[in-house]
Image (cartoon, rainbow, N blue to C red):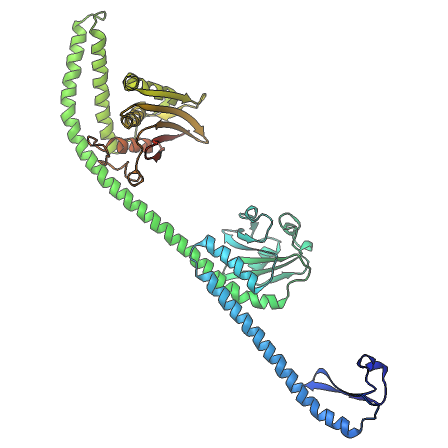
Length: 474
């Protein structure tokens, strides 16, 4: 139907034309608009004018439809290009943390949002592993939602379909709590790979009714690429862990081979040393029997006997270490063990211009130790610190508790250790000293590890070193 007017018409007053004619524009029986013709002069349009205008209306309809299709095609092409670029961007990084950050960044180019998160399945729970746009994103990392559950997140996973909440505050309580209090509308899209749901994309807006089916249409194909990218990142991280574990295993095999050599050497050393030590010990005991306890040499003989016994124990401990035997442990005061060990070499330190500073934390709980072995470790470290200060210096020994561990630190102001040597100082037979055997630190590390502990090292060339023995509190 059409209408035509002669003279001024109130319906077309904004046009300020004295006469006009209008016919409808249709395309495929769908109204598109009106073809409108106006004249500056008052006139009466004829039926021929109307017929001519009606003949032009289909052409106008075809032009309008063509323009709409072109705009639609351009919009779809732009969407496809955006998706392609976003998909390429999220797959070019291998590590999980970097990939999560890139996913949330590229997601913003596809669908506008105020905040978003990636949630992955962890056993029977959804866990937030990455977030963007929140006031404090780090606080939401680790949030979990039980599956099955009555919140929208788990509905997305259980029903394997996108879910739109036009007013999120009417939904489950998490959207009414900080840091989700700003969310007014929400879109959740499942992440599916190999027909398995691995998580979802959670997309938020501060506006009501922000998300619609167009956003679902855009995000869904990107979610498929993201799911594959995250699965690949997981596999890559697993592979990296396996490679790291393989390297550690190889290092342990190399260390085991070195320790096997230590064991063979220790057996020979024990045989060669035990015979003269037995003689020294026997003669000392015979002399002690022949002398009265008040004799001036009696105390010296006691010292010879004690040191011979200690040397014998060291050889035995070296054998035990190489054979990986279990130490015999009893409850011990680590502060007292440290003081007694220091007393053995204290006089030598004082005569060598080495100032000793001691600081022991009070009321430390007893540790289950093989005292002889731990004394050997501490003596090795104190001796190394002393030898690192040939011109004298300061030796600081302290104990402290950190959580479920007790640390005994031995610091010197000596030469320090070069960075290239730090990685090798615990290797058997490796030594930076011209006369060193390279066994002290290796044996010490083995003893501490048998006690469930570890040794850490901090060193700067020219500024000194700090070795800390960490032992667990049982």
